[in-house]
Length: 166
Image 1: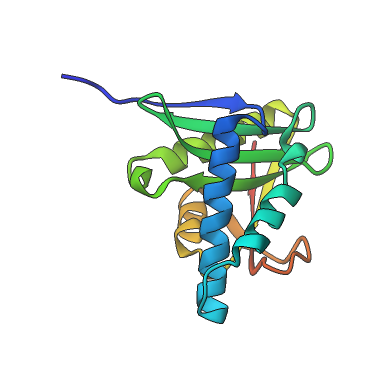
Image 2: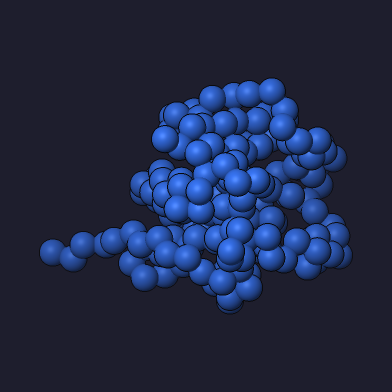
């Protein structure tokens, strides 16, 4: 019998695995937005500009981390943590490739991100998401995050969550 295993480890934000995961994440959430609001997929030139503009450098040590989940050794997902102040961390870029969903990776990634935030000194994790990302909102609620008032003015944020990390 062969056991397949999840692993979650820190990864440089600009590694090939991280870059591929960022591209897949951004493509999916951008396409979902445009399909819902404009009935079209993301314009390829816009996609390339946005991917290039958001390198993920804020997820580099010492104030941030990018975590990559691997399933049976292959990159399968990511989660980012960045410190906003001495006690508040933001969870971002939580993503799993579609074929990897439903296999327990998302709670594992979020848990690893929470542990990472604690190690960086955070006592609270915040995040924002959109209304159409129903799966994400369901996951966060299941993991103990509570919906809060807005904590930023991101034009795409429609739901804000927080969780104490004590």
